[in-house]
Length: 449
Ligand SMILES: *[C@@H]1O[C@H](CO)[C@@H](O)[C@H](O)[C@H]1NC(C)=O
Ligand SMILES: *[C@@H]1O[C@H](CO)[C@@H](O)[C@H](O)[C@H]1NC(C)=O
Ligand SMILES: *[C@@H]1O[C@H](CO)[C@@H](O)[C@H](O)[C@H]1NC(C)=O
Ligand SMILES: *[C@@H]1O[C@H](CO)[C@@H](O)[C@H](O)[C@H]1NC(C)=O
Image 1 (cartoon, rainbow, N blue to C red):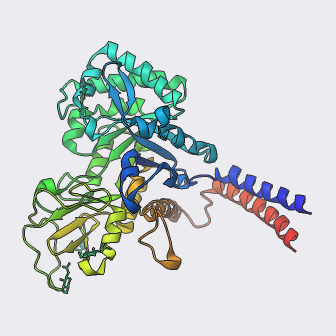
Image 2 (cartoon, rainbow, N blue to C red):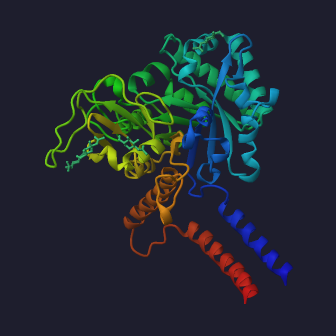
Image 3 (cartoon, protein in one colour):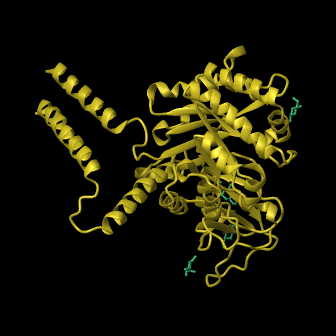
């Protein structure tokens, strides 16, 4: 009897895995999760280790960042103790790629670059054909040695911050040569792109790069911050100027990026501001973004970076009754902001994220990316009691993808004659799945009787 139950259970679980691909998202879109490896050093409940990742919420996971060894033209661990196993290291590379054992759907890439690596060392590498070819061979070895599924290029940015005008063509050549080598081993080659028009124009040969990159991760955030000396949305969906998610995505498509390769980046963080003068506080006058601010914002208790606050810090802060936060919705950017005295936080919540996801789905993009999974409310500290939920924003992305795809499907069907069975293909799959579930459930149910 017991054997019988166990075999039904095994069948049930296998049916689940086969039909759903079941260890990760099943909507068919990509969900790319960046992880900043230094998040482990944050204090208290801000500390995020690899083991905090919930791989069911991501299709792709990217360990950030590795650096460039300019002597060898190779990749190097930026934090050997955290990344490697030598000298009693914590073996981050090994631990993150090991997640694939339990979650076979997951693709784990290693990112090279990031803001702190600057641009000029990459510029010099890309300009020299011999150095490029050494880097191609060495980075391939590095990725394979640590069992990553791919490489993510985060050169910030070609043609800027000490780069040259030749970077645009040289970056393309580097990507082309990397792809030729990576293709043979079936490894992913992706890149993170800056979202500003000025960056896109000097840095990327969009049409060419689109041929060789598997996915382009659009960093659709940091449009505004304390550097503007006035308050503004970190990631406006729309705007009257060119600084918005909508403009960036439309511009990339206009330049020849196939939507199926574009991944919309979503910030799981906000930008903070210190106002020059407290906003007049009256229930009748709603404060607006655009107020004069100092050129440096305030810090959060975990990330401790001026002008930046993780969503996990923001949601805790907004819950603190004694600091009197008032929340507002900015209609133009379709994002929320909060005000307390002279402090302002412009951020993203479930609503703004859902609208961005809907926009990405309407545009037919490959999916969504987050910077970064370590600043979602990963411990569920902002949820209360029975409503406990961790990774609320990640879960909302999943929900919004499903919802948007359903809405689009319905809109298409609605445009047809009633009774026209427009999705018979998926219908057959769904009913086959349904029959299997019923059979297995009956078997399991009979055991309990
Ligand atoms: C570029 O490489 C040189 C030589 O290794 C290094 O000293 C420098 O810090 C690098 N630049 C950045 C911004 O990392
Ligand atoms: C709540 O805000 C008050 C006033 O700003 C501050 O003194 C207190 O430490 C905060 N509490 C928490 C738990 O952050
Ligand atoms: C919050 O508001 C109360 C009452 O208006 C006031 O007494 C208190 O000082 C305010 N706290 C902060 C941190 O601004
Ligand atoms: C919000 O913005 C949209 C267009 O961006 C506009 O049509 C609508 O009237 C605005 N709503 C409010 C309440 O301002």
